[in-house]
Amino acid sequence: MLQTNYPDFRLAEKYAQDWARLRQTVFSKTALCRIYLHWLAKGIRQQDRLPDDLEARYRVALTELKAHPGGIGAFHEVLAEEAEMSGDIVGAVRELENAISYDNRVEIRLKRWQVMAKHRTTSEVVLSELEALKADSRQAAFADENLKRLTEIFVTALDNGVYSAQRLNRFAAPLPTRDIGRIVTKARRR
View 1 (cartoon, rainbow, N blue to C red):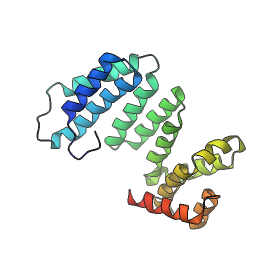
View 2: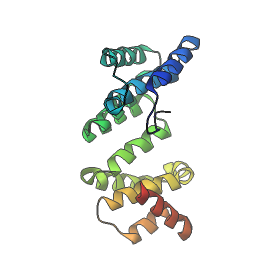
View 3: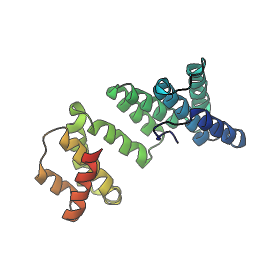
View 4: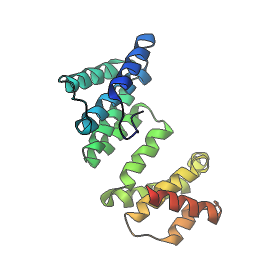
C-alpha cells in the first residue's frame, strides 16, 4: 500500500492499528512505524493535510516498537530506513549493522549491501565483502541460495564503481550467461 503513487495513509494507519489491537507483534508495530515514516516523507505532496501530531505518533510508535520483546532489531531497521530516506547513508548502514547484531536475518544483511552498493563511497566495500563471502566455504550454502540477489547487488556496486565484466562473471559463476544478462538489465532499470 505504501508503494503506490498516492498511498492512502489514513487507511493504512487504520489497518495497522486494527491489526495491532488483535495482536501486538513486532510486525504490526513495525508496520505502523513505517506508515508514519512514509507519511511524513510523502505526505507533504498529498492533497490531504498532514495530522498535526504525526511526528509525535511516529515517535510513540518507535518507542513502542523498541520496548516490544524482540523488537529492537526492527527498531533499528526503521531507523535505517529513516536515515536512508533523509540521505544519511552512513547512518543507514550503521543502523542496519545494529539491526544485524540483534537479528541476523538474510533480508537485513542483503538490505545493508543494497544500501551500500548504491553509493560510490561504499560500493567497493560491498564488492570486497561479497567476494570474500563467496570465497568463504563456510558461507557457501548462503551464497548459493542467494546468488541471484547477491549478483544484483554486485552489479549495482560495479555500476557505481569501475565496471568489470570479468569480475562480474567470476562472482556470478555458476549462473548461466543469460541469467547474468537478465540480472544486469534488472539492476540497471532500478
